[in-house]
Length: 609
Ligand code: F6R
Image (cartoon, rainbow, N blue to C red; front, side, top):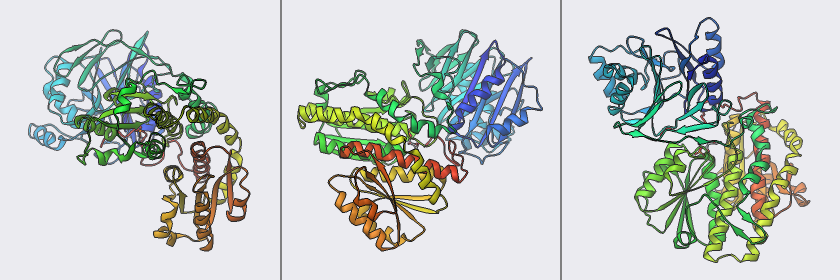
C-alpha cells in the first residue's frame, strides 16, 4: 500500500531510487514520483500511472544529486493524478515528503494550516505533513518532523528531505513498515526488504513511533518523545536473485514454480521423521502452553484467511480443539470473547496487514495468546505476536499470493500435528505416516507442475468467459475460494467459490453453457457427494472442469475437462489442488492480456484499514 524508497550516499541517488521503486511497485502503481537534492535545491518529478511514465518524464530533466526520496502510490485520499502523486512539498518548495499510510485528522489540520496561509496543491492527506513540518521548522529538521507527527493521528511511514539540510533524510513510522538498509557507501530507506536486497542484506527495522535521521554514514534513531534508541542491524538471508524474475515472464509464474522449494525450506529442520516429532525452534510457546489451549481462532485477510479455513478443518480433526476463523477486519471490531486458553493464530505473508495487526492487539488485550504465521522475518505482525512461526517462501512479489499460501498450509498442518501430539489426540504412528506424506509433497508438486501445458490448454478454451463458479467440499471448499480469488485478481473475470452442497441454494440458477464450473473432485470421504454435484451441474447444461486424483477414470465420463493431480492422502491432495488453479488463473490472465503481477486496483500489502 504505497512504497517509499530513499538514498543518501556517495553515488547518484536517482538510479537507486528508480530501481527501488520498481521493486516496490507491487505495493501500488497509481502514480510515482521522486525528489532529489543538489546544491541547496530540491527537484521533484511526479507522474500519474506506472513508473515507466515517470521515467519518460525524467528523460527531459536533470535530477542529479546524492540524496533523494521516491514514492509509488496506491491511492486512498485523492484520486490518482500528477498533483496527488508524492513527494508533496511545503509552500516554499523546500521540504519534500513521501508517505505510506493515512493521516486520519488531515481535514482538520488542513483547515487550520489554510487559515495560517498555507497553499495546498493536492487533495491528499499527505500534503498536510509537508506544511506542518514547515510550521515546526526552527533550525532542526528532525525536531520539526517530530513536532508535526505529534499533531497527526493515523498511520505513517514517511521520508522527508529539505533543501536546507543536504546531509540527511528524516524517516519515521507508525503502523506502516519502514526499513533502513546499510551499505558501505550509503544508506537506504525502504518500505520492504526485497527492494534492498540488491544492495545490502544489513538492515535495521524502524519500530512504531520511532524517528530516524539517516545520514551517508552514521545516523541515529529516537522515539517520538526524543528518547535515543540503540538497535543493532540484522542480516537478511534472502538471496538477491529471489527478488528477480529469473527468466519467467511474470513473478506470479515464477512463484507458482517456486512452491516445491518453498515447502521444502519451510519443512527443513522442523520434523524428525524417525522420531515422529515436530519442532519449531523459533516458537516461544512450550508444550504446556499448547496443552492449556481449548480454543483456536485463526484471523487473517484474503488468501491468508483461506489458509485459516483449511486450518479449521485440520485443528478440529487432528487436535480435536474447537476452532474458528475470522476475517481480521471483522474480528477487531466485534468485541470477541476470549481468555488465556484461547490461541489466536494470525496468518500474514507480509506481516504488515493493518487489519491483522489490529486483530492481534485486540486478542492480546482480551488475554488470548497470539501466535503468528509470517513470511517476513522481523515484520510488525511477527514482532507484535507472543510467538511466531515463519514460512520460508522467500520474497513474494507477484500481487496474487501463491507460494505464501501453500507454505502457510504446510505450517498450519505441522502446527495441528504438534498440538495433536501435545494433547495426545493423535498416535505416534499416525504422525509418522503423515510426516512421510508431507515430505513427499514437494516432489509430487514438481511432477504436477510438469503438466503445466495441459492447464494452459484448458485455459485457452475458457479465457473469454465472463463468470466462473468454483465448488469444493470439506477442505476443498477453501481451495475453491482461493481458486476463485486468483481468477478474479489476475483476469478480472467474476468468479465465486462455494461449498458444493450450497450450490442448490442459489448459485445453480447461474449455470449455463457459458459459465465454467471448476469442481474440486478429490478422493476422500466426500467424493461420492461431489460426483452428485457434478451431475447437478451437467443436468443444467453447465461445463465442468474437474480437479481430480490420478487414476480416477470415472471422472472422465462426467466432466468436460479434467486436471489430474497425483494420488495421495486427502490433506496432501488439498495442498496440491491449488496449484493447477493458480496456473489456470495465470494462463487465462495471459490470454486476456492482463497486468498479472500488478492487477488493477490491487496492492500487495494492505497497510491501511
Ligand atoms: C490475494 C492476496 C491478498 C492477501 C491479503 C493478506 O492473492 O495476496 O488477499 O492474502 O491482502 O495479506 P498478508 O498475507 O500479507 O497479510
